[in-house]
Length: 98
Image 1 (cartoon, rainbow, N blue to C red):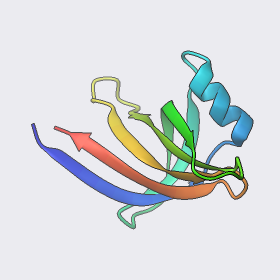
Image 2 (tube, helix red, strand yellow):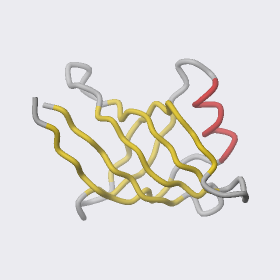
Image 3 (tube, rainbow, N blue to C red):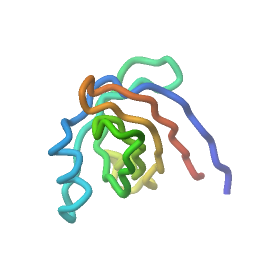
Image 4 (cartoon, helix red, strand yellow):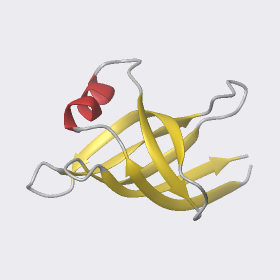
């Protein structure tokens, strides 16, 4: 199995309430707009598995989870990153396992 890492930016994502709902309510997924490897921004559906406060502001978060592909036959890509709920922007690292 080969693992490929891709780096990119979160350009738009949910607010704090939607982010926490996605974490605590089973089956709830949210959408992020991301730009990976400098290519055109893409809207992706994600499942949030973890959220950790990055600092004391309660606006900055370390997040992780899975990107759910539109094609149900494809494996889910794991991601981690930093996200600011005030600006709805952040950084993302995606790991693809082949």
